Length: 369
Image (cartoon, rainbow, N blue to C red; front, side, top):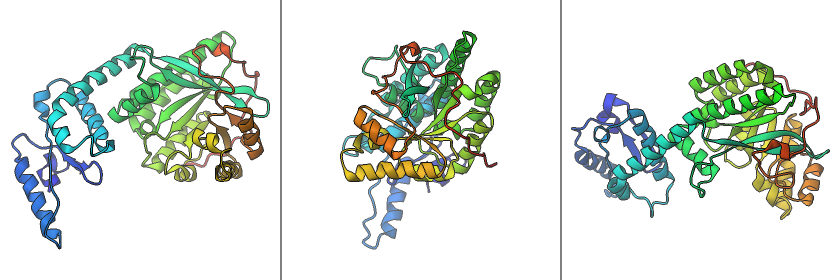
């Protein structure tokens, strides 16, 4: 019914198990449509009760401004609505406050777009160390936003970028910033390895992948200096397509890491379908490992599986010597956490890696996709 009433007969979809959305012409009688859906569910219900139907609409023509920005704002609002507690954010509250939410979302999107355009973000570095030597092997590049309100966390900002579809632009900007930094350091005789995060949303985008490879060709001499960590904050849907992207990056000489392994429901599916060089074990498993026998067993199992697959492991949130000793006993090769250093805007605050350290052992063969 929604598709039949949508523009082009296509612009309708499921937001979650109980909420649907569609784009329609201004003259569509949405109240009549709601009654029709209620009648259909009543007819299909053996008890003839059906379901209640509530609706919220927004007039996109009345919003004015940039249509693409309005689309991003709607995407963000609907994501917030779907993820929220129904007792706190109902369809009624969505209907009552949709205009104000759109304005607030569009203002924030505009501010973030300017942040990307102006390069108004900083890069902090956190060391990833070889657990055998406890010397830095490479550094993870972490975004910092000094011009945002102090109570705005970097994670929340990145999540906002993903929910609005702006993460692709930011990921490219971050890669460009790190490559520029590597080039400057290289000209000064300093060679570092740096890992940059790529959202699952970004690497699933054909246009993003094309733009990324175009950028990488400009810095071809730094292929062995730049790693990529695929983050799980946005669920990856087309694993075959994403794996093809992963292999294209590996063929270009870049190591690829699956970040936050174990945090999401699809983690083992990702490990099965994505051929990567490195797996970073989620910090929750590391912090909980020494608390229970089950925690120890889980971490041993994950490390053992990766070792059997020939995949290097990195443990997050290593904060004390006891955890370090346990991780080494489990066969985890590398670690990251406050025990080795907090993120810093000044990479010279850390011990420099040894020159010529290729790291991560023998590279796995790449199967053509």
